[in-house]
Length: 239
Ligand SMILES: CN1CCN(Cc2ccc(Cn3ccc4ccc(-c5n[nH]c(N)c5C#N)cc43)cc2)CC1
Image (cartoon, rainbow, N blue to C red; front, side, top):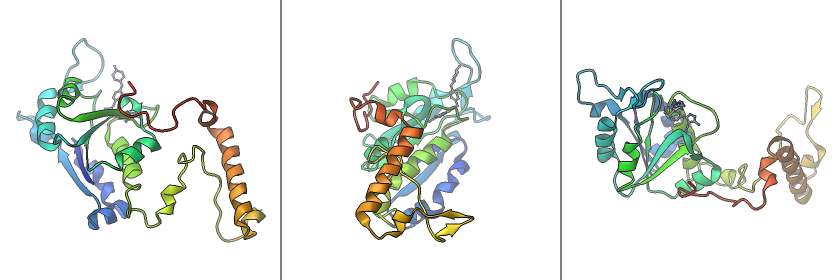
């Protein structure tokens, strides 16, 4: 998988080159190129933003800068991902779907966002997905992009040391995973649940499922509430 990321703070993406993702880059399983949007500016001040039409707070990022940048960075067969608070929710199913892509391009906005015409124009030749990391407001797209990339790339064969790790992810069976334990068997007066020491794999599996259900009921009843809702990713046409 090829990843291209555009930002006015390219150094913000440096953590992508650490640990497992760094190993995946070194192993050639993924390539990561980060582009400084200001390289596509035209003026001495290297301006990337301007006041919003119709008034309102803050500034909006200029189409005359983003357009030429995406013309250069995003080929027609890539998927262009735009993190935004107004996007379709990013979920494990989104990550699963994206993990099959050959080329992802991420547009990291700042200020109050990017002129909408940038994506309306891009959509004339590439697939565009405007996606939100969650119901909270960040200052820019970089943190969201790093989370989305990590969630997506870890699903690519060979990136995680233990392939079973993501096969038993939270959400993969629709439930939160239950508690985990390791040595020592007793710690500060707290003991590991005896069933985990029993060696009875069927009982361990049953107990873990019960714990997952109990935790999901307590913390995420919404995951259990609507059996009619489509189980997986509703994809880019979900409006
Ligand atoms: C008058 N209007 C003007 C717009 N604001 C909304 C608004 C728009 C952008 C920003 C800052 N920002 C800029 C680029 C960018 C990308 C992603 C995210 C982001 N935040 N939270 C997520 N889950 C995100 C993701 N993924 C935030 C971003 C902040 C607030 C309402 C009032």
